[in-house]
Structure formats: C-alpha cells, structure tokens
Image (cartoon, rainbow, N blue to C red; front, side, top):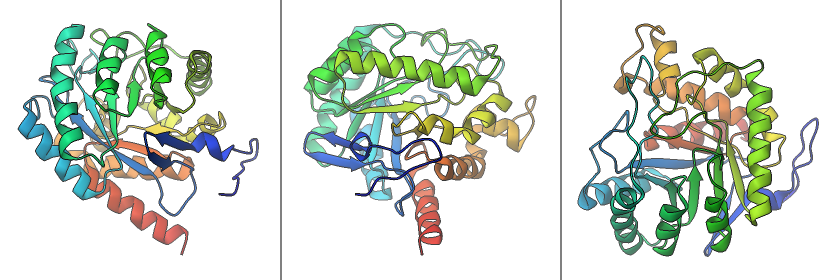
Length: 307
C-alpha cells in the first residue's frame, strides 16, 4: 500500500493496519471502501437509543447476525451506558459495578465468538477487569470512552493481548458524564487531550491505537460540528480516526432545534449527512446504530469518488 499524505503529514501505513488475532483491518482513509462500519450492540437497560432491546443472549445474537449481514466490519458490545446527564437525557446513565458489567458482557461475547467466529468484536469499556475478561473470552478490541483518564491499566491489558485500543475524548466519568464543558478552543483542546492519551497507551505497549473525538461528550452542539469539520486536523496525529455521530443530540438539534430536537428515531438522515462529512475529512471507522444505511452511503460515496 502506498503512503498517503496531507499538507502536514505523511502517514505511516502500518499505523492504519489493525492486526487483530488473524484479522487485518485496513483503516487507511481516502480509499474506495470509504470507511469501516462498527455496529453498536448495547447490552444495557438504559442506553439512550436502544436500552433494554438486546440484554438477552438470543436477542443479542439476532442483532449481531443482522448487523453482519448488513455489512458491519466490527461489532461494539457495551455493558455500561455512557449517556450524559443534562436537559436531554435527565440524570444520565447509572454507574455499573465491575461484576455486573462483566455479567452483562461476557455471555454475549462467548456466544458471539462461538456463533460468528468471523466477527471482530470491540468491547466498550474503560475498566481493565472487564477488558481482561472480554479479551480472554475472544474479543478483539477495547473501546475506552474515557481515553485512559481514570486508569492506564486498561491499556496494559490491551497491550498484553496485542489488542487495538480505541481512545475517545470525553469529560467526566461514566455514570456522571456532564453534557457541557467550557472550551477556549474545542479542536485544539480535544486534539491535545487525545495526544496525551495516545502517549499513555504507547507507554503501556499498545501498538494499534484509534482516536475518537467523542462527539456529544461534554461538547455543545456547535462544538460537535466544529470537531466534525476538523477531523482532518485530528487525523494529523497519524492514527485512524473513528467517529460516532449516530442519533446524537447534536443531530437532533440540527433537524429540529436545541430546545425541541428531532426524536431519536428520526435522526437517520442527519446522522448519515454528518457521517459523510466526517469520512470525507478522513475518518475511517464509523460507529453507528444504523448499519445498512451507513454501509450503503459509504459504498455510494466510494463509487462516486473513485470511479
């Protein structure tokens, strides 16, 4: 694969090849494939969009089968909601004890590994104990929504399994994440925070790192849009960029108003529009609830851009 360059950086292709237990996931931006799609599987009772829908193993397996059939490259399994507190979501998600989170996630991981051995599984957790249990059961990637701010042990666990680590920017702790934070320069501050998290992961020995600017986590609607337009700046870190705009409150505000946002179930086309902008700016992984429409969007973009 040839190197691709921007105005500032020549990217190392090896940093964009996630080697995962016999799988190689090419996350180089600017290719005809557009981006990899990560399907969301919340095994929680209180996630903002689909809480309670997939808490049983049979329901989770049916959802995984559907997302794989629709073209998902990865499945992201989460046992603790990160829904922030604020006017939109009320008090926010409750913190989940370690044992309870493991009990939610582990049976699903074991069942998916047995039923769909070809699936690449990401685990949405910041807790090293949950990461350890899931990776030992056959999961492949850890997705830390705290960006290692609370413990570096999660990175140590990932390094021990040579597992890729997704580092997301956020403010606060799951169970008490604020909806707002004051930024002087949201792009500069988020990028600096991600760079510090990447350094912590590298120090722990993690080889494959993905960065996520954390849309909707401690940012105002306009700040989310600024970050979306600045994905190219975040890409200058030389790591794959993941975006998660699916059904977020910023999309609801765009389609309605901040005081009267569009309902969660009516945010698909706004989510797809924001996804297209992020991928055109250089994102190469898209985390979404709506797999088939996102896959079809990316196929159409790739065909048009690289005909």
